[in-house]
Amino acid sequence: MKYPYLTVDLNKIEKNARYITDLCNKKGVEIVGVTKGCCGIPEVANAMLKGGVRYIADSRLNNLKKIRMSGYDKELMLLRMPMKSEFEEVVDIADMSLNSELDTIKELSDIAKYRNKLHKIILMIDLGELREGILIKDLKDYVKQILELDGIEFLGIGTNLACFSGVLPTYKNMKELVDLKYELEDFFNIKIPIVSGGNTSTLKLIEDNELPAGINQFRVGEAILIGRDVSRNRIVPGTYQDTFILVAQIIELKEKPSIPRGKLGRDAFGNIPKFVNKGIIKRAILALGKQDVNIKGLTPLISGIEIIGASSDHLVLDITRSTQEIRLNQEIKFKLNYSTLLSASTSPYITKIFIAN
Ligand SMILES: *Cc1c(COP(=O)(O)O)cnc(C)c1O
Image (cartoon, rainbow, N blue to C red; front, side, top):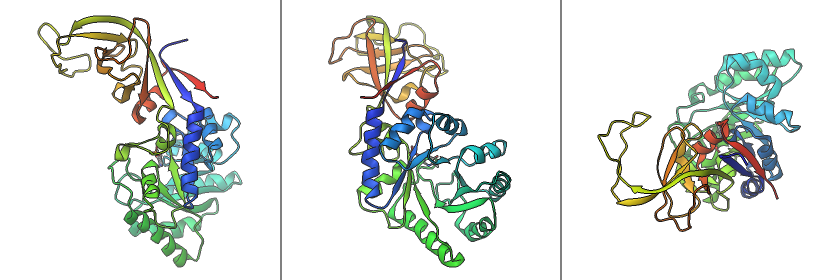
């Protein structure tokens, strides 16, 4: 086995997807499975589908392409607004995309027309988060022009919260979105099939029975992938968190002091490290470092083990209070938070291994 490696438990990911889709489908909300947290691993996309998500979305065309090439035959949604250099590929690879710029939508329409296709779009509305989305005052003007485009199918409206500014989804802002849908339907005398309410952070509204009727789609990644909701710093009830496990090997194990000796400058990353004097402690060094993965989001599975710090290639642990005996060469396992999952997935130094039983 090549260390460090990441195990991907496809069964648990499927179960997370099943739990969340069941919960949301009961309230009339379909789930789109978001794979960007693991760089669009096709096996993960497949586990999500088996767990009941309608189709797959990702922020990157490369990931969508990888999923398509694996034999996936459902629709694909692009989450990040298309950039000019990829407009043609967007139309070729993605069946639908989230959008907020008229010029972009017009170009997508031209390309789709040329390809004899209809590209579906969801128009993103900014409800205060100040990432993507048009302002409410511009909504009717945008929709009027979108409805005139021959290459575009206007699928619906959506919003994204709790990612950039940390604005939480509430009954109030979700109701605002639903009311905008009704207003547009009346004004233009059209039917708007999709109101895409948001990401993992919106699940709490379903759990608390506070989601207004009319929201009928969530785009969910984090809760399915690792059973967590970073926006509220919580575990999503009913889900597994040990879906992805990072495994590294111990290359040094010694008793040493807990504070360094000598005149202190900065560490390899320009920071001034702080140390607590706990006397002599048992220190283990793992062959895993900041070059491999964002170490901040690692949680050791063995309780009592603490992460002291890391440099590019070394992770230093205090194993003095470990509840299990630790030996040289042994492997140590970690759970990951979302940002560490992202970095482990993009890392060429980390082997990926699938578990499915
Ligand atoms: C990443 C992303 C999601 C999924 O977010 P999670 O918090 O992982 O559920 C949904 N919508 C958009 C637009 C995104 O960029």
